[in-house]
Length: 288
Image 1 (cartoon, rainbow, N blue to C red):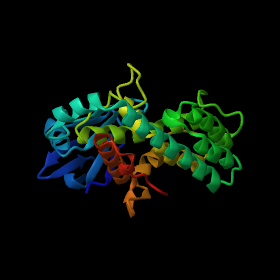
Image 2: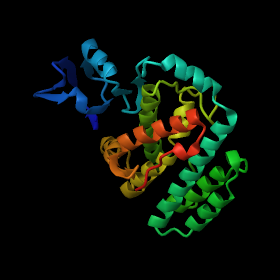
Image 3: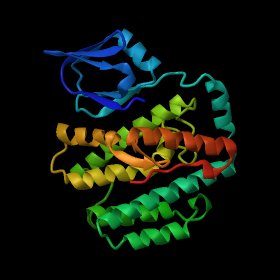
Image 4: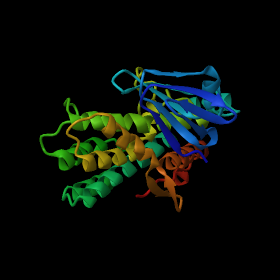
């Protein structure tokens, strides 16, 4: 099972050789393709061969390209993640509204529950309010408990004056971490033969990743926890690497300790099972 997140942060040449990705700098490093889950190319001073790109796509490895500010700007996704992609896309378009709403309700409930757990870890009394929001949650979150919980949660974590709309180091860190998690979900959606544009709840015509935006919600807490522990004063290379490393943290899912990257795989597959079989009990969520 692939597990490595490979970060290329400085000038290098990448190519493919007998099953390995070869990273050529002053010295050469070989990494077997089967071990790689994600390749993050942070530097614009990297050149790579089409032979390597073809192998990475063939093995369904996520490749994220960054701009000159080292922020993710694009990614490589295979056209065909599964042999029956056409059938699955037709199914996706025809998913029943009730089961989509039921799955979304479960996702929102789990997101607020994870936020509550994080507040409990840091002994924030506001965790009781989030517990009440979970109990008050209605089908499809028609009363927007998610929004109310988010305001309480972020103010409890980062202070009453904190706003997600401000341009500051905390928000830059959060946004970067969320983008890494989002990229992992786009990979898994593609691997399962579905498309990212058609979501369950998110329905923005300008958002290419509506479905990934839906599915990632319970995993945002992992980013929040990392940023809280970092207490960043600046947001540069070291801080970004800590956030990318979230994919290599361990969580418990389906009774086993798994890398976060594998937990995303298991959870995403379970959501599609729930949608296809119209049974939310199929959904598998992670635990810390």
